[in-house]
Length: 368
Image (cartoon, rainbow, N blue to C red; front, side, top):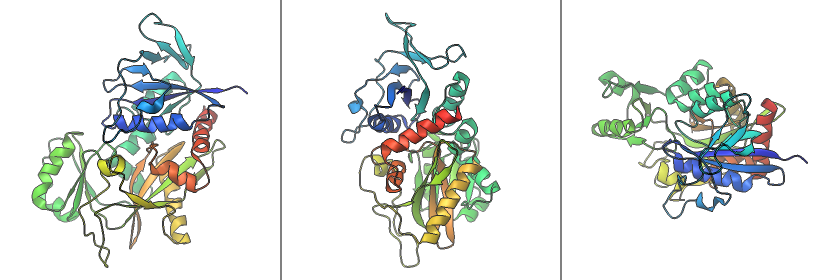
């Protein structure tokens, strides 16, 4: 049987560099080596492409230390012309110009800016190599929280209230504060893994939260808090074009509770440490929902996928409120770390990790 050569891209210039490394390590550990030849390609925080090691043990969290791409590995580049389609070459050293491999498909296990936001996808479009995941438009719109909600709202999907604070606008107006109320969530417009996000329960803390978000993006999103259960749902496209939603999972965050009326009684939220370092978040999988509620979330997740013209995969995050579900975010390249919900939701839905990865690769190849 002819084996498919898969280049796994990870790292990059994003603030989510280390999360990408951990995700890629898990992906490479679970790709079926009887079917796929795997070429690890790490991108340093300064944007240098390197040939990664076959041993992925360095791409794991050690205590509270996150991994990074080793800048001392051999440098490589991917051909961008039709003649060099899929050709990965050494850039320097005694092997400069020699071919490392001819890649059949690229799996960009990359999160955040200069990665998941359409930039890498545009480069791969130029290269002509099939790649896993959504294309340029859906990646860019999914990365920018302003445009995610513009698209979803135009499609008639349920979204929350938000205000966009552009460069030059220092804080909310009195009218905007009244419109959003308290508490608030202040976020970089184009970021993930909860980096730069603050929960604001007191008006006097707002400006500090805006300053923190602007460390990562000059455009800031300020959202009204939504009281509801945090539920996620995975979406997967198959090689024949079928699009399905997984069983949903409900997250339970330590320190966050609700009273009998459903009002939040805690300051905790799903921040970076909770996601990746503390290992204290618990979940119900499947979420404890009625059959009707589950079916509605799955339908909305698929509708959000199509509204963004996504391909391959996405993870749709909801708040399930007393008035029904509200879409919080759409992740076009969700985490693939060992504790990430996307692969766990599909495992609970009958698609184990190796089969999930193979489906994603084969869907990319079928799309061409």
